[in-house]
Length: 110
Picture 1 (cartoon, one colour):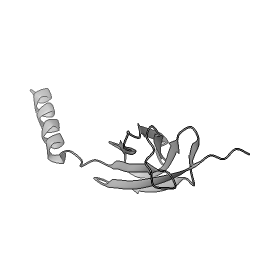
Picture 2: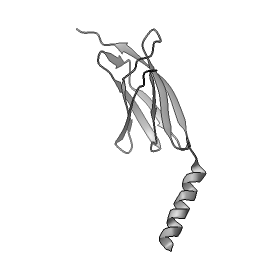
Picture 3: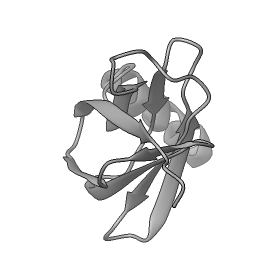
Picture 4: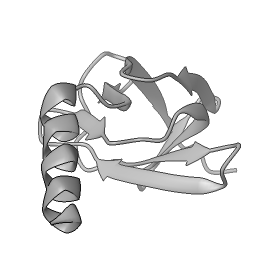
C-alpha cells in the first residue's frame, strides 16, 4: 500500500511541475556573419557538481540542454574548424531557461 502511495505522490509532484519547469539552457550557434552553424557539440559543465550535460545543434543551429541541475556552468562549443571566442559562464536557477547566442569564429592555422 505504501508503495502505491509513493508512486501516486511522485506522479502528482511531477504533474505539478509541468513541462519546461526544470532548469534549461537553450540557444543558437552562429558564425561572425550571423549564419547558423549546425552540428556543433555543446557541453554545459556544472562547476560546482563536476557534472556535464550535452547537446548538438540542429540543422537550424539551435540547441536545448535539459533537465539541468541548479548551479554555475561553463558552456563549451566544439565543431571542426570553429571555436568560441571565449568560454561562456552562466548561472542556472530553479525553473529557469537561459537562452544564449553563441558566436563562433573560424579556427586560424598558425
